[in-house]
Image (cartoon, rainbow, N blue to C red; front, side, top):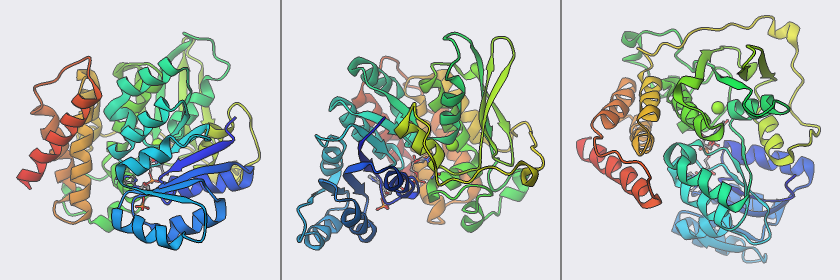
Length: 381
Ligand code: NDP
Ligand code: MG
């Protein structure tokens, strides 16, 4: 069980819910970080008294330094500052709740410093899974999934003998645009894409859910966490988000993990494993849920899911490229520079035109592929 935790991305959706869990369980907070939201970060720092805080934005960090000058909390800035927070000496577990591939280097920094990881930042595994998993193993550390589907699978696997797993069945809500045709998707707005039926999340992952890129990223994430291939991972649409995912065992028995859609359950399990402690999340009311429905994903309309599966099969740097293209595309969509369907086209084009794939990759290869993909897209739009 964790006791001293650093929260990277503490001002976001997962970050603030992690602090709810910490407050309830009396965890000591050793470091907190944000991109630029210093108002909330100052508030959090005054409540939890971490040893250090770090802000990516240099100007915001300078302001926070002044604001916290009456405390003994150290304030750091930039990417180096976030890495220092990730490696804070007294901490035992780092919760990575940063959004995007920006979370990769801090994850590696935390692992190198000997910290266990509670990982929400799925882009870390999508872009750098081979390196991260190797580093965790070499250091004898634990990496606990926070993503609800992966936490569900991890929970289902408890007590199952090794080699008993036949398939992973990832559930997907289907996002804001389930059932829509490509024609109907042509004109959807940012506001519509940011309305998720069941979960209240940050902007990027909400758009990823609406394109089903999120499920594609999660297929790749699952392949690293549970050491399996594309064909071992099924995706099923389950609109109610009551079943958070399932495993199919060799004897065709299925084990599922159910509950209300509240991220504080998987966050807490990642921090208290193997203990089960009281949670602020509600009990499910099955008479209210009444029914659970399941559908096949529409791979032709939601092309991102198919492209992620292709990237996983091709391996090497392909998932890094798919992720970088998506981060660029979502950013442009949120700024209303491109249309909704352009997101899928940009990701597909980036993956299909990426011909210099290689295996046995280094962190420099990953950073280079990420950078080149972004430059190529930036030059085009
Ligand atoms: P949010 O956008 O709500 O929060 C992101 C956090 O990261 C904020 O603290 C933000 O700071 C900080 N941040 C943003 N950009 C950078 C950067 N370049 N470097 C360092 N810090 C940065 O995201 P979510 O909490 O929704 O998601 C976080 C991660 O968890 C994502 O990878 C997502 O896919 C995953 N996840 C989220 C779920 C959810 O329910 N939200 C569920 C499952 C997984 P600031 O506030 O200053 O901008
Ligand atoms: Mg998820």
